[in-house]
Length: 419
Image (cartoon, rainbow, N blue to C red; front, side, top):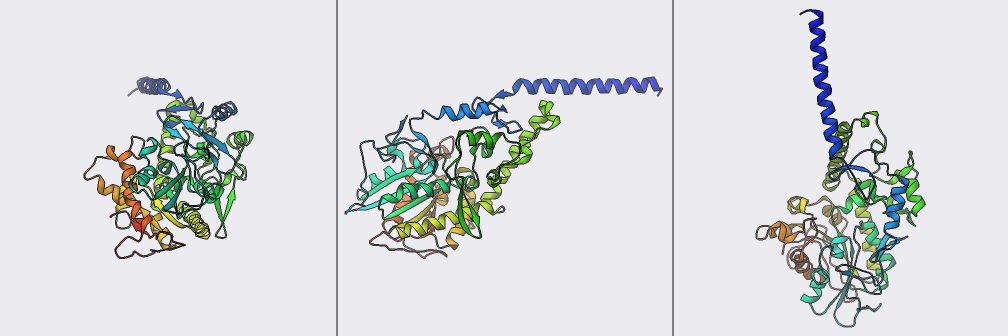
């Protein structure tokens, strides 16, 4: 082949390649949209790198929550439920408890019957269902001698739930205090700024977290960051000393790369980063990355100790996670549950009951599209937890089981959730 012919072939190949790259670039740019919540480019639910929101976007997100009628900022927990708050089907009484707004609870526990106090995240709060469909309300309807206080907080980590019990729940004498833990909390307990864990939202959300120092819990980001602190934390090129403790802050996701000028390469890098995040979550659930379980167990241990000191019995309730039911129901079970039992912390894992329920009910009957529980799902929670509130479940105790009796407090023991 002559040199001119070879050169012509190279030019033709280059032209075709340029057309392909150009077409791919144009097509990619056409499908990229601006996320109105964060101000960042996104493709579907994947936020494009770098994860560096503007100061204006942060301040606008912060301002949008200032007039919330239900969830309000709180320097101790990050956010909490507004006393007498209301939003759609959610309502709170003057004490900030999700209940009938006209209902109030005395500090002393009732002289007749039993008082249960529940703290946790949205699965405890009852996201997506009306008040009477929450598992707390269904428990009260099933058992007239139970009084159940719902102090769950949407979006909470186990750290925030524990802090809410310390700040607000401890003021109410109870027979049993339930700490609801959804497996996702394992990831949240390592996080300070929600945006860094879920980049499609949460610019305005700053939460406290515990770290371990020689085995002891140390609370950081308390009080939580104010507006200016959020701006500094999310816009500075170098992480502050505080942000070095956010497990989900990844330097590789904060840095602009020259090849990001090509949108399709930027999208590819962003999709890969999202995949790595998903894999990292799975490693936390499965315990191959131990950091999440270690801090969660330490928080649960402190919770159990302080609840016992208050004269009540602690119970950790592991909520079902639709994507993890097979692991929760496996013979080995969730590593978090095994670790809690090893610490003799009373625990009930709801996963096995929901796994079994799928055989007669569809997943849609038990879980809402976003993964929260339906009315029927909450009813299962109420039925499974009830025996643990009224007395020891019959049968052989498992390894790590504890049975407690504190001043006529109903006994509580560790188990899985199969009846």
